[in-house]
Length: 173
Image 1: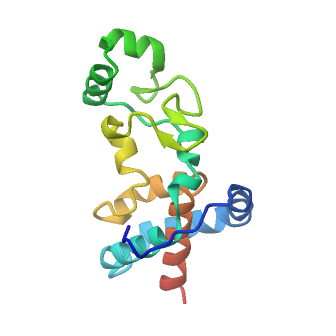
Image 2: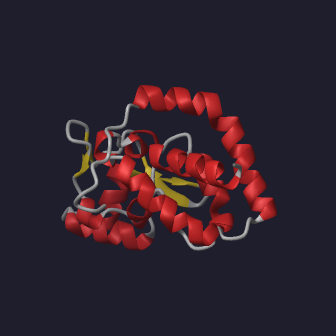
């Protein structure tokens, strides 16, 4: 985010209404992108990403931390447990569960145990899971290969919602 930008606070109530009104339409649009693979999409993505972050302030939202769980890689678990001066087994026992279906380590509760609900800041930000560091994954190379991620995230992340909204406006004039 540039120093001149002044992102707006996220109104979660308004966001939830927008999602309710547009979720199906946006998911259909993303499916269309996946199948038609429009030209220039990968060049458009960073432009839209910059616009989105000039408009969305994550610290006024933290909906991802409140409603979702990152997946914790073994590297994440080792790094975070060392940061917290815990053994890996103790960290897993206290904070995580193993999702047998997806074979992922996930938070045992929501909102995330590391989220400060007063400030919307992460207490382990400098060692947070890679999944959190990359979220909401807007600028992944080859956007069409990550459409399923965006389909899921439009329900939780105002930045993803805004990205898809802008993409739809640009690609469907």
